[in-house]
Every structure is written in structure tokens, then in C-alpha cells.
Amino acid sequence: QKEVEQDPGPLSVPEGAIVSLNCTYSNSAFQYFMWYRQYSRKGPELLMYTYSSGNKEDGRFTAQVDKSSKYISLFIRDSQPSDSATYLCARSMEYGNKLVFGAGTILRVKS
Amino acid sequence: DAGVTQSPTHLIKTRGQQVTLRCSPKSGHDTVSWYQQALGQGPQFIFQYYEEEERQRGNFPDRFSGHQFPNYSSELNVNALLLGDSALYLCASSWGQEPPYEQYFGPGTRLTVT
Image 1: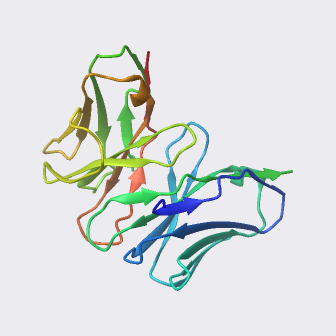
Image 2 (image 1 turned 45 degrees about the vertical axis):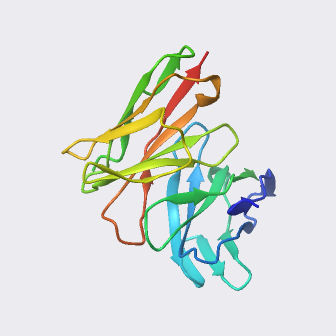
């Protein structure tokens, strides 16, 4: 079982839709969870991170962690064509800086 | 404020050769991590440097080695290149060794081994 799993998609939605992107993880010792956005042929861009459980909101983006079910979610409100990219979830341990990534979900927002 | 920079952008090498990739961290960052990203996959952790020492290492063979300089910049060296080493090599920088470990990535170096 991979440590972090994501549905690769592609996920195709119309402009303005609410997007839900999800990851599951297998190691309950995970502490920090990150979401990165990666455009084609570019490096990943940090969107936001959350610690432990709960929600964190930043503009149109909301990150949610449910430690009881080992589930991580990223919600995008009012999606735009510029949101079309690959979204990567990652986790880090409390000690040590190593990030473990999922394979990424391809998102396509159609205008 | 310059972000993470990497050089070169693209590189084509022949199997068996050696390659050196370079990274300059974001201003104010002192920790550099290297990742390998194969097509259609998430980045895989290679190793991390802090205070000019390798602090953590992923599941990569000894053909992969690195170095960090006093100005915090870093190099990744790969010896005896294999076709399977073809990938996007990403450098990420962060500050210190305490959480939340926000890592910022550079644009990557695309290595093709023929």
C-alpha cells in the first residue's frame, strides 16, 4: 500500500464548479499535510498546508484533514480555467523535512 | 525576492555518463531537498542537506550524491546514468529543521538519458 494515494483523474469540471480533490494516507504518524499545484513542465507550487485535523481556508481554497479516516481534501470554489493543473498532496512527519507525495490528480476546468 | 532557481533547464546525456545539477535556494532558506519526478508520478525524495551535511536520504542508490555549499546552494550528482534516470529533478528549499517544513520548489531540470 502506498503511503499517500490519489485518484489520478483526469477530473473535468465546468468553470465555476466546486472541485473536491482527495487523498488517503496510511501512516497515522503523519503530522503536516500539504497541497501543491503543478502546471505542465513547471515545478510544484505550494498552495497551503494543514496540521493534524481540521480545516484551513485561503481565498477560494479550503484544505481539510480527517485523521480518524486518514483522508485529506482540497476544495476549490468558483473554479477557473487557470486552475487546470495537476494537484499533489503530500505529508511530512513531525521530525524531519522529507515530503511523501501522492501521484497527483489532473484537473481540467472547461470554460 | 528570487525564488528557488535551478540549472540547467534541460539536459541530454548518454547512458553511463555523469551529470551535475545545481540549485540556489530561496532567499533566507538554509535547507535544500532534492526530488525525482518521473512522468505521471509525484516527486520522490532523494535526499536533504542542512548545514552542509546530508540529513535524510530516500531510497536511492549511492550513484546519487550531493553537496551543499556555505552559501546554502546545492548540487546533485548522478553517476553511471541509466535510462531509468530520465526524469524531472526538482530542488526544494525551506528554513530550519522545525515544522511545518514549508518547502518551495524550483522549476526543475529535465534530464533525458539516451
